[in-house]
Length: 269
Image (tube, rainbow, N blue to C red):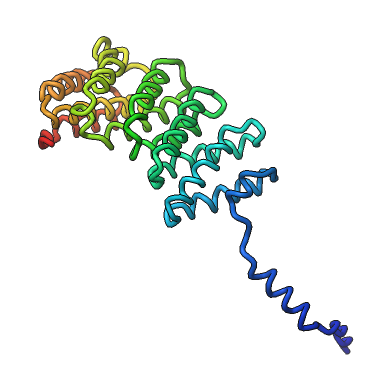
């Protein structure tokens, strides 16, 4: 025989109302959570919610959200995991925010963090999507920071991530050689000239992924210059890639070089 279930206490109408109200009450604004003291798990969840909600939010709300992420990313009071996630989402959120001041501050925070080894990879991961819609005043600092990093001693992961960000920067602004010929020249001096000076050393050193990404940046930058009226830039890089083709030993990198050399010239823009 089963014992009868214990009787539940009667539920009053007032208690039911309070329970229903608590169940339907909106969760706390993630910006408020980021702006106050809270456990790391709560901050991480707030970052997730805020990042997911920004694309459909009003522009004023987007600017506030971006600033909350920036403040979280740069705060020494936050846990490292929270700062790392904030840097990543900060970069992904830049293109959806129309406030130039907020976007410039976010980019500056990413560039500062990219110079610090502890958060470099996370900042660079955020910087890559951010490059797709930069304020014009941020273009020079972004390229300069990335070229400076690539000229320094980096881990393989840091170098690959920096090259991904630089490739995104180059490919998302095909008109840059016309608007900022100084930046096109700086990229040539910082990346193409060292490669052309010793192609054998380049082909023999570093992981294949680093070589592939470096070649991609150089190729896309040269095509952008050719598309804006400098075909000689693409011819120089084409000759360099022909030299590298004979030196390269990795099959995937050789295939990439072959595909680039076989590509039709770009249309003028």
